Image 1 (cartoon, rainbow, N blue to C red):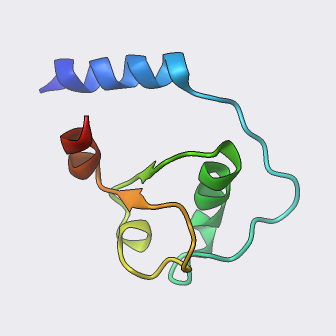
Image 2 (cartoon, rainbow, N blue to C red):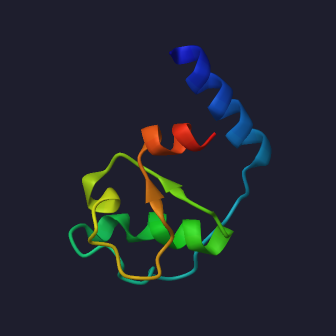
Length: 79
C-alpha cells in the first residue's frame, strides 16, 4: 500500500546521507555501465544494501565485493 511506501520514504529521508563521487566510478555493472554510479554511491556511503528493481543491478552480474542489491520486496521483508 502507498501508506507503507510513504513511511519507508520518510524514514530514508531522516537517516539518509549526502555523498558525492569524484571522477568516473569503477566499472562494476557489466550489462549497464550507466548504473555504475549507483553502486559507487552505495559503497562510498557505507550502505548495507542498494535497493533496486533494475535487472542489471539485481542479477548476478555485479562484480564480486560490490554492495548487496535487494529488490524493493526483499528490502521490505527485512524491515
